[in-house]
Length: 294
Image (cartoon, rainbow, N blue to C red):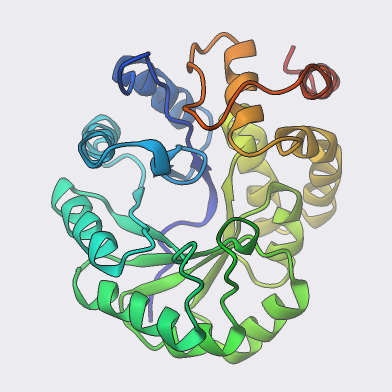
């Protein structure tokens, strides 16, 4: 029986940048903030971490830093996905050597692989490492959706732990739950769907919201798993305007702006991502104020 890599709220942590490279001292402060406020896992170099604009060296140094700084207190899950199976496998092996507890593998983007291609892609990577994989389904960014039948095939692999599901298709999620064994874990990849996915047997969320509200995001999950379902649902509903504001522009543009607004000095997003519009900034300001962050 596979154990889930984590249960609860894992933060898809932003990567703070200087003008030249990753700002590791600030990243250390962000990690401390997360660990002090209930976060159940650290997910580094994912979409929110802007891995696609980081060099190979930067990605590995950031993963190594997180592993060293967290020092076993929480699971560290490294984003090692690529649209090249060879590159994803190399990243995955290096992240494993750096001490990552697990890997997050996005579907290959741009290539638009078939379901058979997705199966082979993930199987090759899972065969090449000895740490658990979380698949990452985010068709809005990659142009590819993992079918429930594909999950059922991939769930047979001992190193494939589950999926971060950001497709927003609850019919597919239910079908996946029916087709896959109980030990194939599902995490929400959308903060506004956390409680709903937990209701369908999910293990929690890989969260953008947790960057600004880690304890709150943790508590949505913790209350659900403690049987306090109405409290969890009410917290989910209260967070909706802030969740929407954090996705009012391409992730992580709003999240980075919000972090900077809170004084974290997370730096700007790397091109081609730019500052949010004045309208999005106003939406974020209002949502953060109404939520009690400001």
